[in-house]
Image 1 (cartoon, rainbow, N blue to C red):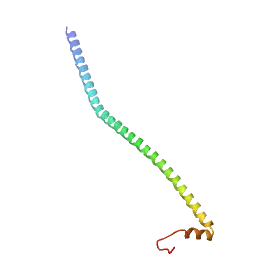
Image 2: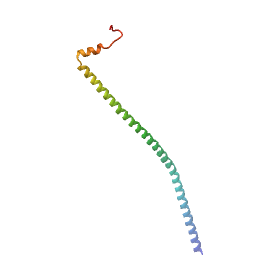
Image 3: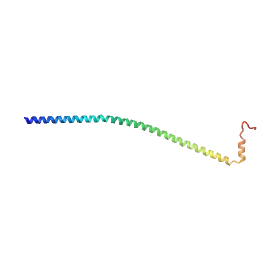
Length: 114
């Protein structure tokens, strides 16, 4: 009988030890899960910020494309104006004295006698 009581006490002690070990694991698991929540919140916050930044980048890229097109158009206009100016300057350089005199005498001013 004493042998049975000893076995029963050992069995109860082992049960208590196992119960304490499982409770300890549950508290460690719950503390780990509590730590996961702030990390998940930070991760969600970073994902939202990343989405906002991606939207901003898309808008900026569209603006850059528009500015590049505008720059190309302005460059074409400037090239055309320079070509026109050079053509006119070459025409004036090639004009004779008589042609220049005729051209400038055709202007009338307030103070002119004619």
